[in-house]
Image (cartoon, rainbow, N blue to C red; front, side, top):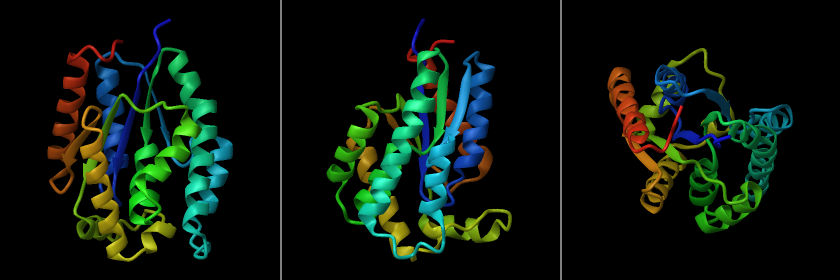
Length: 215
């Protein structure tokens, strides 16, 4: 059986990942690709429990390295329990966030170091990286405005960070995109939803055309 492929959607807060993830899954399905969607932190029971701890607004005293290790622990369990079985079954997994989030948020924005966080996570994921990452790049101020305007969205601990933190997150993502250009495609998420979705579809179609994915 042919091993499936691993896709991820990344972006700073308010970039519209959830919308893009849903539409990307539909687009891939229309092209004959069998897709399983998931998210990080979370995706399976143990990882969801860790997610609740990490994002709890009450945990304001959480140390940056504790945060990084909790994300890595959640990722490991999600990896072995859902990502690997999905890939081994020949299906494609499409994940809302993966390792790049830790590199940008904890590695760069928290100041721990991208290489340090990369080392922790390489241990957790056994050097398994997405085949393609769609990076939704939004101006941090605009992204936070979107979050505040969305009354249905649950506010988590990271949403309470200052604008300067979210600016560093974006800077981190840009550095990571430069570091891994072979798999990361930057999409300008400051535009309208239809424009963002059109570019997302073009990126996926280009990926399919290279023969990286097969249905």
